[in-house]
Length: 331
Image 1 (tube, rainbow, N blue to C red):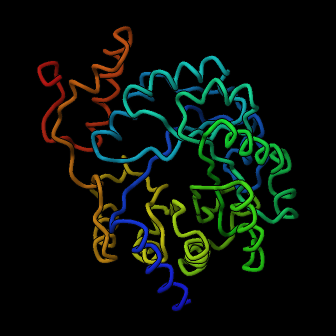
Image 2 (tube, rainbow, N blue to C red; image 1 turned 180 degrees about the horizontal axis):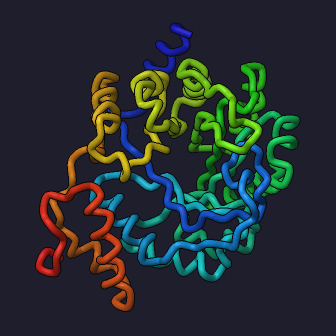
């Protein structure tokens, strides 16, 4: 492991500046029409009525990310949660603020891809595990084939392609060649390596999460084989002590940390400290509230919903204890 870590670190430094950052996934719903992925907390709960977030709240969260220097990992929501036309309107509302974004909303067909393409940087396939036997068992209603078709169609439209993998579902090192081939075949330019977060009521409730070495092994090998791929390491609040290790293994950035709830916490400070110890400059901040200057950002918001967006943003800023209150005179 020491040799692969050194190789991964060297290759990273040859292809990227010594920087890292936090990426936040923006969710528009907490409902999924599939509802049977064995590791997901939603699979442990009764089927619920589709719950969609207000557009104003989503836009406020996007503005918060912009203010704090957080990048948006992707826009996501449960499969079947949001109608095509409404999702398109959401993308149009977000675009003036942050530009094109990654989409992680299930296996999109070519027609949908064409409509979303002007507002999308790329599409993410929620593969989760590359082992076909495991995948059919753990994600029975989410086969890989439609995702591969989506990725190939995306490439034809000039979009980038990404994927997610959850370490700890039962994959083994011998499965790595399958991942390597999938990346090559679908020209994956961004990969999210998450670590299993056992959820109560699921088959993984009592499972042991993967160690930092196990998560780092997949990251390091991917970095060595794909020097310029964008690798994101998913961590949780109880795993911030592995941030430095995963960065040294070749990850570009981190995600999954509950950044608003834990803003300025000891865990947030530890992330920034470990990033520095790994030789990376942390872009943005998980600990320092923004100096508010929102004129340009709120100026991009539709006048019909601007007041509601501002109200939602006030709530976010209250959670992270802004340096001064948000008021009309500051925008």
